[in-house]
Image (cartoon, rainbow, N blue to C red):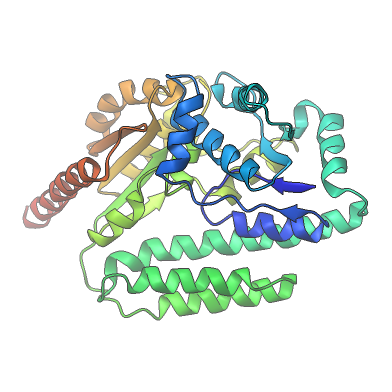
Length: 363
């Protein structure tokens, strides 16, 4: 099979390794571009959300490169994300594409379906071989996430603009070149050491901002116009509420083992949103409260335009912001969102945070 999948941050490097190890050809999805979004917007329903449009554009690009199979995830509950795959498939079929779409649904709802999908993906390889390959891929994704967390701390303190970004990209290459588990662990440490070696001003007063919202626009820089880069270069330390490893552990491991996860977040949100309304709406409220309790200077909510869970969360956010005395800035993202407008709003928000911190210091 010639397999492709959605692009989400640096994870494509781990997925490529896994797919090729299983004996398939991998068509690596390109980082979403203006062309990607234009393609998706052209063929998607007008009021579909940004992730649906970007993913559709990505699929059209990889199919043009020869992919015949797309692996993606499904979903359950009120969020429309669970309908992405069938909508994408119907659109692609109507455009004349003959491709296979393997949708990995949450295992606990249909274990047999999940196992049958894995059987297709592993091909002639043994289950033991598949397990070993997945373990290596998992180690690589963990390494990527750890490197990105470190980048968020280093970038706002760097002495030379762009130095941490260059070190981060070099670190990605170091990790990407590793294959065996031991090599990946060693590469992770080497990449972290390389990034931490970037000259920094550790005495610099750096505002801390929590980043909350819908998972795709949080994890894919092309979907959020590289907001983490912009904030870091403005001297802001970003703490992102979702990483791929944490989300996977919660939804594919703990949930299926019957282990309660995110209890602290849900408890924090309970006063304002006691029900799970789908997507990450409840988590956005809970994370905002926890960030306030941890002394963060502000919170930024990222959401696709028309995303119902985040719209509901946004309607509650003014009360949370007032009650916990933490500024919250919301961006609803679609194909019309521009870098210049986002940067202007971010600069004003960061100025506000710095003034608040100065007032507290002089009080």
